[in-house]
Image (cartoon, rainbow, N blue to C red; front, side):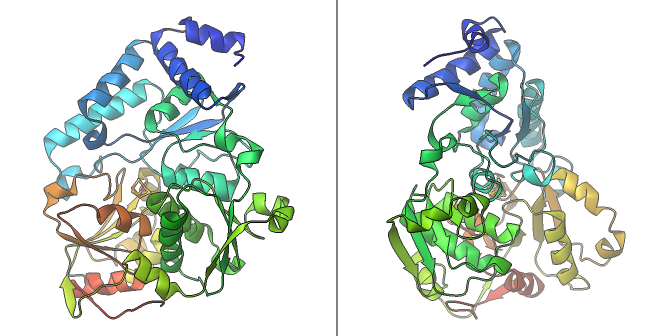
Length: 415
Ligand code: F3S
């Protein structure tokens, strides 16, 4: 692989030992995946922020890079961390965790990575354009920028996205190449997929069925393919599988520019009945009656201000028996303060939490035992926490659950 003089200088340590370590990571990966060159990138999104996930070993690595003078060369933003940095105390997180989390954020800031602490930075000012090469690591964000925006990134790990930020380069392999972005399987939708929850169900089953294969969906109706629904679809497929890119016929830009893809001789999967999807994914409650709940959770991936305002509108004037969290970025929470008229009419059990989410946060320390959510990705990951009872239900059912303090088992199959 040919390196430019600038790249070789970084590798030789001319820009300090921190940049040298980062370039070694980039070059090693590029060689493993047989890249011909390193590509300049436009932006990075770095995961691995929660102190609970990276711990002291991760902190040491960040501090070594910082001591070696490394600094981000491109726009770089951070994924959610383990706590709400402003309201951690009132939400019940410990002082010790807060101090450790601050150390992680200080280390990243020292490297020039902006502490935005969100998985939807494309709702703020980290917004790639079609065809841009970027290096992102949060799986739902990777799926969104590849599929909906049409930028190009592999599904990076936190360290490799950070290394790309500190050098400004990534290897030319994987999803940076045209030939690796072509669909491998056609998913023919023969059933109405309309709501946020339907897109999540579809995503969970397709992720578990397809693994890493790139699907092209046919039969999804444009009116229902809002950015929010596509985000839920992609996040779910990236959680239950490892799908980093999908296309939607007639809707996503890359599919529209390559309408000859429909003539490809592809493996085909037909989706005829969403109830079957539910059975396969174990989404339906087996028991009858009602289940008491400790928390209702929205905002995975982090909600936009429109999504929050619409939810707050639905919650207006309602008295809740169960805490309800809506996760978003700090900037969006700040923006919402302007909507005093709505906020004044909302039960105090509703918390707009920022910087974190229920999945990356140490919720085992908060005495939460049962959760309902409208997020397919949150459902998928929380299901694996042994101390939690978790249910995936529609947005309106989540509101009913918060009002009643329990979830009634009323739904079965498609809604
Ligand atoms: Fe974002 Fe946390 Fe979900 S990082 S995608 S809200 S698991």
